[in-house]
Length: 209
Image (cartoon, rainbow, N blue to C red; front, side, top):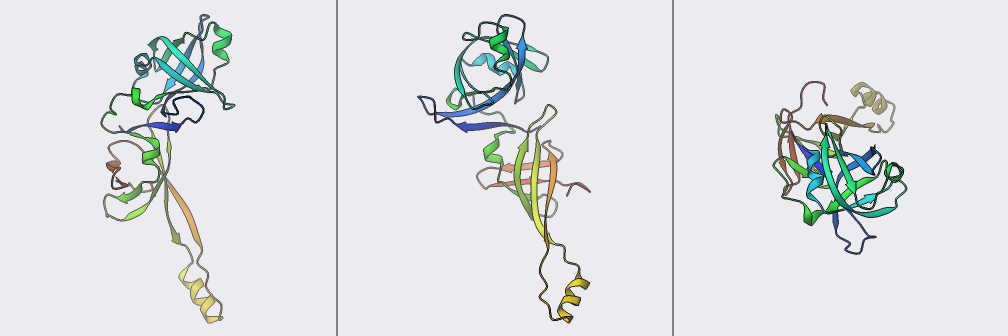
């Protein structure tokens, strides 16, 4: 299964370093200030590896916090920050995105990429070798990432319409339509990712595009 992480460039912190999005706070846990974090990655246990985190609140405010402890509860990470004292303060952080410094990350495991490196990749049909579009968006959800592919626009002007326009002395105007495909980021469909070459090879099944 392919996984992805979102990078950001923070212009408000003193270090102005590259940040990586690890997850989002989805609620408070208990009464002692713990928060529940949905992790964008293979395991929520990653949060215990970091000392500092940058919280970006829905309204755009940023807040640096220090990780006191972290544990796993099902698919969520339960994290206590030193700066968050009680449940009310924890609730105020709901929907905040949690970033860490890129330099603090371990080397990305196989089949794991940064979202910004995936978006814009040229999509190659693995069966035909034809370039069919590009990755427009990486949609992250609980099951697996999904790649939204902007397929190359195709001429949808019917041949008979073109002939009729020509007979009438009119200029036939091409009518193009932007089509999309949604492809789950699993090995069945994703055959190769080459960031340096700027390409991704995908096996499409019937009805997918």
